[in-house]
Image 1 (tube, one colour):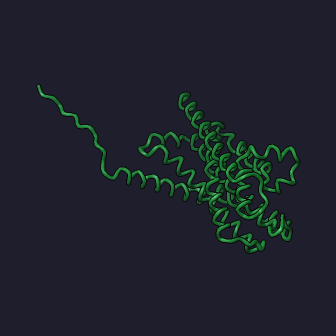
Image 2 (image 1 turned 180 degrees about the vertical axis):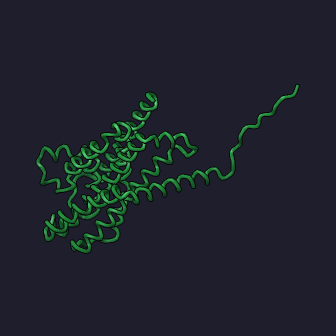
Image 3 (image 1 turned 30 degrees about the vertical axis):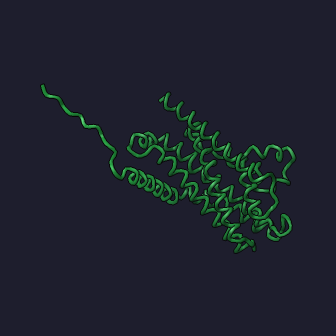
Length: 269
């Protein structure tokens, strides 16, 4: 009687290199896809730029929020957060919901691609768009709003915009797995616009009614905006540590919600 030898697969050399190459390729193509999708790229970049030009550079051109800080410089931080939120909510929230509806997400899961590559690519796309938006807003502020900003200040707000894209991306993922794909656009707007206004991104928080000032700290956009204002030398509320803790807590909560929603969808599919 002869026996058949079974050879167990061994770890292939260069596995990590191939995985990283796959991750990089997925991220690169996701960014290119988002940039080429004009309906998304023009609106994600255009909305914060348009509002900043209107409220920061035209209506309040020569106004100051405090000594040495103009309204144009102050609103630069707020609309940078506004843009970062929009890129994540619409790019990830609606994007993933549409992929679910079209069956593209299931195809990605069935492919040999690393499971996290899809999610990481979406997050990187949101980070890239956040950096593009904050760069454009800064150039507009300097060119047309006489905003005086140092390189360390710009580096800080760019870093905060990129970091802020992470909790906003987690919010978008949670929305994508909880909301029916057909209503994802409406739900995204119900999150995007009220959260931005209630966080004081459009007008300084101190000008809002007291009840709105009280509830503002429940939103991640409020905490990221306060970090932006502090980096720009503008009046801010709360401590830097408390804002980072709040953003981290929000991120973990959204990741938990996303995982539970995804598990629920898997069990019912």
